[in-house]
Image 1 (cartoon, rainbow, N blue to C red):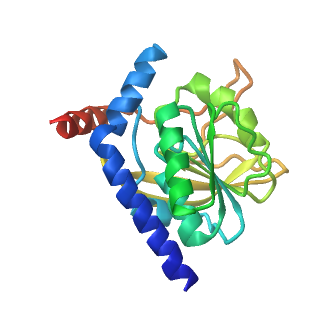
Image 2 (image 1 turned 90 degrees about the vertical axis):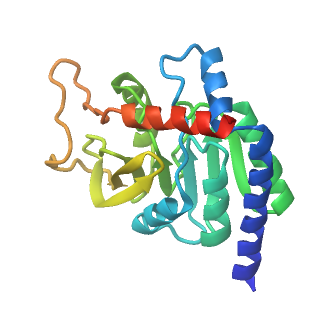
Image 3 (image 1 turned 90 degrees about the horizontal axis):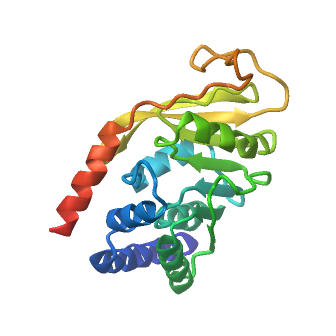
Length: 238
């Protein structure tokens, strides 16, 4: 009965998102927000398909009652799915106000217990998270350097999910690497486990930068994702 009820709640949430999308295209909403922020890359919006998210959370072994944090939750549909289908304590961190507003409304209307926070994920405290999902494919090396201290605060045993490449940090050891699909194509996702003691360098991680003393974290070029975002926005505007 609980599973049926949870599934029905999420179906209702999807229906509400479908209605909202008629007058609030998420790609256009994010682009305009980034233009106001005078961002260098205004086509950064992307959504993780539910099937892909399910695959990621299974690989991360997210359990009932564990604390799940999505850094850059967008419209929030991923957090709603995780809460309703897995039974985790989900938190979505997003800085686009319209996304947060509609996500909170839909969570309230469907009675799915998810907390949405309007905040840059560079400011969010991850110290009590069991699983953190970060799409992060658009982040620059400088932004990764600013974000690392927040990820370092994750408790031992917690898991970090990132797309395209793992971060190079001695406190995070790779657990799994899986192929996943996004609207712009197929890539790799990595599940990393946080530990206290220093780990040996892993061949799939980058080396310590001798000049700065920081661990380099380079993300694969996102031109394919940016092009897809432009195409999706144009198609849905027609």
